[in-house]
Length: 318
Image (cartoon, rainbow, N blue to C red):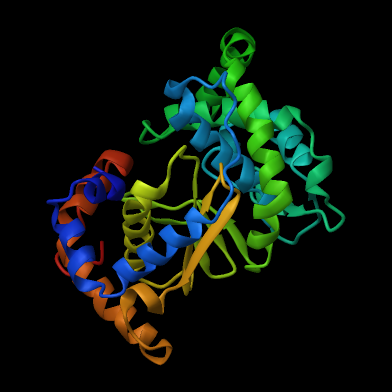
């Protein structure tokens, strides 16, 4: 069970909590709906198979993560690649290795965004790379404690035997289309959110986000018609924010980037919480405490399946 699973169940305790305890939630969804209606949609390639759309969304999310991250992104994934492959992908994504005092054994913490990086000149092969990496990450997420050498070996096997013939034609058309729309509009909006730019903020086994850009939590969505799903997107973002019990990411605004519209919809966190900006921290603390009590059983179950650990003692934060 994940946070998204709970949110998609309208009768779950979490869904009920978000609908009833956040007085400004509906007004922000209404505003986002109006803004979306004014946006121009980029036509999806006719070759795109509907069954590939969910996987396309995961791959495009990763493509933007590689483009926006300040440092080497996806620290759970990249160490499972053969080192030369991780290096190749990072260089293609516009990062470079620098000398730092305390590099990790895999050296990934020594990668930084090039100051002269121009996303418009990025290697087009990276679209296919992230499709493969996204598929690989999907397998990896199902493993509690992956062995690095085994997974590096599996990567080589898939690279040689599986992936050469596993890039759907519709996805090969869709990725450059989404990328061009992002470069023309969405990227500038997201860059203006500021730094730090972090991929996959992890709040627990129960909740992993897409991006934090300068204190704004952003989810990437590639929906043909996102309007009906905006309430779900809102609840997902709010669930992630309230799962950050320690306020580790200092999130003060939320947003969703809609790939086929190249549009970023944002809101100050005080809006859905229905509080004054001066009361935001206090409201967050109270709501996070209340939500922890609601989702504790699900978080403990997710921890066990992901990490193989039993729930902590009574009183421990989930």
